[in-house]
Length: 424
Image 1 (cartoon, rainbow, N blue to C red):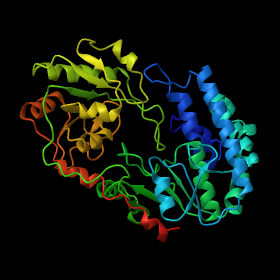
Image 2: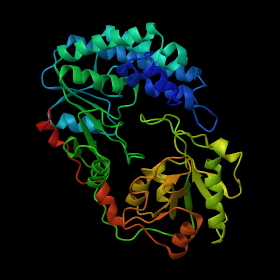
Image 3: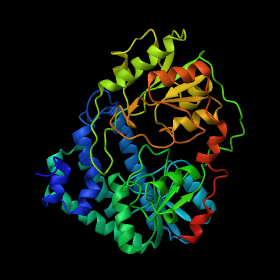
Image 4: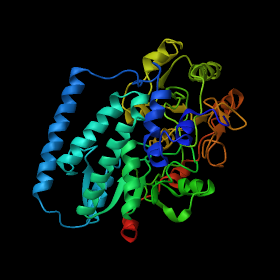
């Protein structure tokens, strides 16, 4: 055996063909790696709470109603299917497109493009993805269900003359499958990236025809990683305005510390395993450095996928207080943010608070075994990075701030999607 990789073994030995392997990689990964109570919702816990079931049932009924309305009405205009984040759908509508939610994920006020056959087949697949074990997902019966669903979804796209799809990623099952369908019927697919990438590789975010990013620096980093510049477009961000601050807040009075999280689902070029004790070590290390400057207490904020109460069993509860405010409020009341690779870096700059990047690493490999990426690797002259305690303490002692103008490098203003008219 040349490579000890279960998923590669399945692919190489015809348990799954290439396309189904790609469709299911994310879900199979979750069953292998998204476990442990450091995650807020580990895969072993099947959420069957009454409120959750009731809410799901209400969504189910609303979707059926919306499908019935769509089937009764004639669609006039160019149709786009999108489940992108933020207000992307509203911006597409302003450009004159008829924008519909996909049946697998509807928004509060969106119309859904589906029919009853597609909806029921999709719901059955969603139930399997939620409840089936690893072995059941690679059985021929389930693979046949996927093929049948793919066929009816493809026919719907063709019948409704869909011009394009917009998705937030290419890893999720339905997003991945819909990109494959677009290639089969020769319509363009777009990924609207939802943050600063934690990795630039040759697989993820490459499946679609086009990738839309927030700023020129993000595009530049993708191009440096080997991605074709002609398939990357810069849109800006629908929420953020141009940053005009020249001086960021930097004091030790009210510090917010972000945790260093582990990935529960791996990137498609292989599994990278991390030691979860390093999540605790990260906070111990930050506390050690801050105490040298007389800091007696800080707030800490886990990643949204993490369980904050798990951390409290390991760390000093007198020093670390769990932060449960919404992110905007949390940052605005902070005098400084300390954290690892995160899109919160941009959020912090936007609200005028310095973000001290702390990425303990060796040979540019972080404590979760992932390579550091720009701008968190120290390659951007405007953005100081600390890779050990000495460097962290040097930044804190000398109040070495991020150059606030770098915000505009990573988020272009104003938000503009007009370029898609030439691509659809």
